[in-house]
Length: 199
Image 1: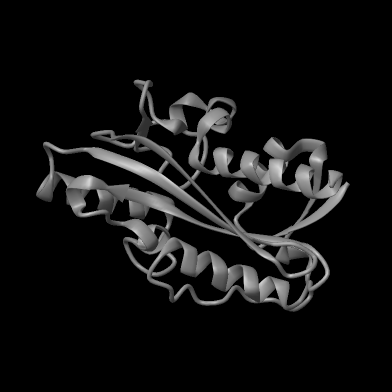
Image 2: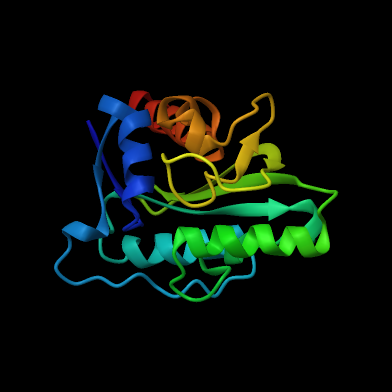
């Protein structure tokens, strides 16, 4: 089984990796390291920020598979915001509920008639030799008028994926993991790992 180091301390993200990859990879995180601090995400794009995080962890685990993701919500009526600022949209170290509240407020003020949105996920992956691969996945949807549901994390309570009438937080983890932006990216990652190990 491949050992895969995921550059996040977000338990929700780690659970998604474990649930979707199953027995295809043994998931490790910086939480297992005695000394590690996540680098500041100073990039202007999702790729930039994912690369910053991946390089930071790769420096400590040079002979391992390392992956970092940067993902976020892009709202059409807000000019693509919160985008790369999704995790800290309300403020630095904002809670999910604070970010959701600000998002709903800004949409009500600026684009109540346009609630079109998409989740974007970008992975930067380094294999044991240091070769980089970039994976990107998107899921389209709309923003609900109020936060609903109790499962998931981040903007799950306000995002309704196309083809559904409920938010991810209402639909539950099993349905989300069938087709979310990160689920799609993780499945592309699984295919890459299988290809590399079988060649």
